[in-house]
Image 1 (cartoon, helix red, strand yellow):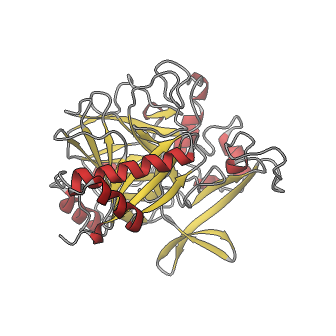
Image 2 (cartoon, rainbow, N blue to C red):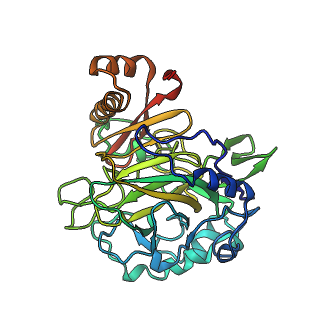
Image 3 (spheres, helix red, strand yellow):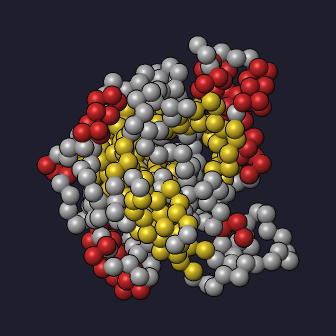
Length: 404
C-alpha cells in the first residue's frame, strides 16, 4: 500500500538570518489532520494505491502532459501555476519508467510484471506526446513545472519547505547493468582491464513497496526489506544555461542529468519530508521544477538509479530578498547541509568543505581557522551521488554543537 509521509518534527528551523516561514506550524497541523481540499480528492490518475488523505495545500499541479517536461528546465515556458510567496502547492510527479521508452507503456510495464490497474493514466498520456517533444540536449527525466513564485527575481533565494512526500503507486524500478553507474567505461574512475559484473543486459528490478508493522518498506526479496524514504531526486529553479557548462550543449537548454547551482538532479537522499532546501534564483519568478521521484536510495546511487517511483510532494515556496547564495543548501532538524558540486569528485569535496567553512564564518561568526577546525572534527562529508556527470558531496553540520 502507498501511504503518506508528512512533517513530524516541529523543531525544523531555517538557516540563520532566514526567517522561519510563518505558515510552517500551521501547515504541520494541516499535514497532521490530513484533510484534502475538494480539488485534490483521490482519483485514478493521482493517488493509485494510496491510503489516507493528503495534506491540504493552497494549490495543486497534476502531472498532465502540458505540465511535464522531458529532460530539461525550460526558462521561457508559460508557468503551469502562479502562486504567492509563502503559499503551499501539491505536485504530482511521474517516474520516467514506462514513460520514456519506445515500447507502448502498458505492454512494457505489464511485461515487467506490473499489474495494469497500477499503471497511472498520466503515464499513458505523457507517452502519447513523446513525438512532439524536442530531444536534442535533453536527458530522460520527466519533470513537473515550472511554478512561478510572485516577486522572485534573480539574486533572491527560494526556500522550499518539503512538507510531505507520498508514493502514488506501490512499485518502483531499479536498473542495473554490467557497465552502468560507477562501472561505466565513461566513468572517471574506469581503467582499461577493469572487470565487468556478470549482469545480463537490460536488467530491471521491479520492487514492490508497502507497509510492515507500521513502517513503509521496499521488498527487495523475500529476505530483504529496505525502509522506504521517498524524496524528489530533482528540485530546481530555472537555470541560466550557457553552452559549455555541464549538461548544456544546445543554447538555452539545460539537460536534467547534471545538477548545478540551480539545484536539479541533486539525488541527495536527505532531502525528504521535514527538510528545507534553499536555491539561488536565476530567472524572474524562480520557476520551480520537481520530479525524478525516488522511493529509497543509498548515498552514491552507484548503479545509476534508485527505486524510481512516481511520487506526490507538498511544498511551501517562499522568496527571500535579504540575502543571496551561490548554490543549493538545505537543513533539517539536526543538520545544516552544504553541497559541493563538480565534474570531479575530489573537487566536489573541496567545494563542499569551502561551503561549510564559508557558512560557519558568515552565519556563526567563526574565523576561517576555527571554522575549518570545526569542519574537520565535527562535520560529516557524504558522497551524495557520483553518477550524474557532476558529482555531489554534502557537508552535514550538526546543529547540536551550537549550545547557544
